[in-house]
Length: 320
Image (cartoon, rainbow, N blue to C red; front, side, top):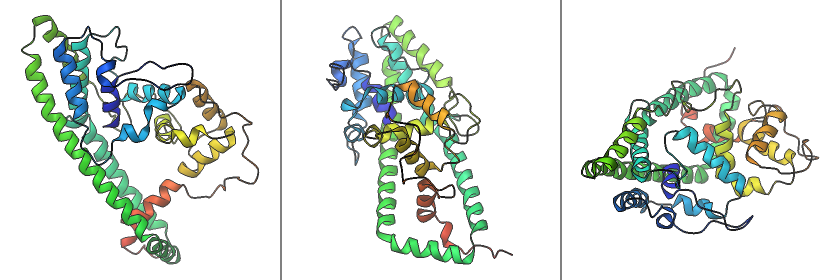
């Protein structure tokens, strides 16, 4: 839902080399667009309001550095390939049709979010079995002890996850209702505007969002264990932390702790990724002294998964 809200807000011009961006959604929409188009774009943005957290406010996108904006644009491109970002050259009805088609495609189509959730659930069950099968009784006991020690923090995470799911379901419901109303309203507009809207709507509705493996359909395939979109999403959502790294070694170690050093790929891969979007932590490519990542260090994402999942509710099989 964050990407759709950002998409609906639209790109904004920077003030100076390092300054933030000015203005809200109403200011960013071209005045040449028909009034009904601007009205519906604002309605879709308003559908985000009233949730437990305003994600764009928390993200503080108006003060993010340029590399964050470039990386975000690429994430939006692979997630919503049919939506045009160049407002100055885009037709209002065409833009709105793309947004509406994308929302419906993501939330209510066989190649949208349902496919990704199904793949995630299958992966979760497979991962649970794998973890249970490798744990010894002693390891199981240690993990259970850690789970008990972290009980309050885990419950807070679970409670937050429930709120996020509730927010998502509420926003999704409001947006799907708006989709139906917007399509009906567009059908009553002047013929040329109606056809521009419907053309973009139908084209976007046919676009695949997720591939059969659960990754973004329009993301470039890779032999790496971790896709570039996963790295970019973590960097964008933690841009303040990433922006403060003093050298490449600090950045690489941070990624290694999150995902595991065996999953993030080579230094060359990360350097090229950073260069592509203009992110430069400076310094040498080596790790900071005294902060080397252990090869067998468990990634934070897997540690958090084990502690918050149902893996530890049943005892593992006895190993020979």
